[in-house]
Length: 131
Image 1 (cartoon, rainbow, N blue to C red):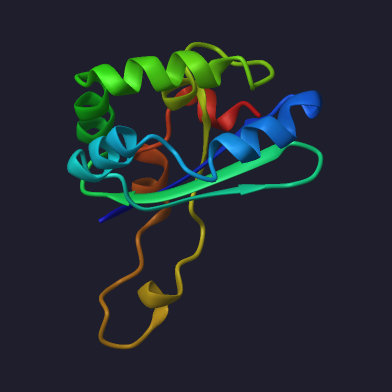
Image 2: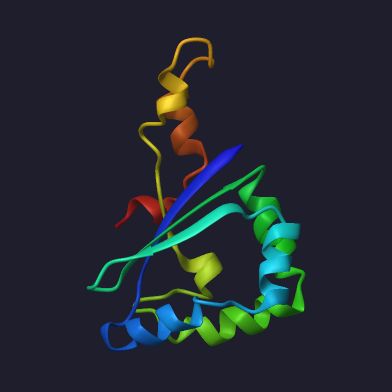
């Protein structure tokens, strides 16, 4: 299972509305996320607009491709794009991925070897390391 953490910056004047829109997302969007492998998905938002997202998936590429094939995702991404600063593309493609450096379960006896540093960097796009 791939664990994905990412960041975006919500425009300061749009934080309240962004939060309100996520209190109850469209049911068809929730269904599409679930069906395409965006599991255990959470968003965290600081008062200054720093947004941190986290989800687990079998494959980030497959999860993104699955969502890209849905009509609801195109509508949602179009509506959400206006909330972000310095966004290159749509939110689900333009976020900055944050590399994982520690996961407790990887360190516990009997759970297998920890991921090597080279494994952690192979799933990171070049843009992800620029910020």
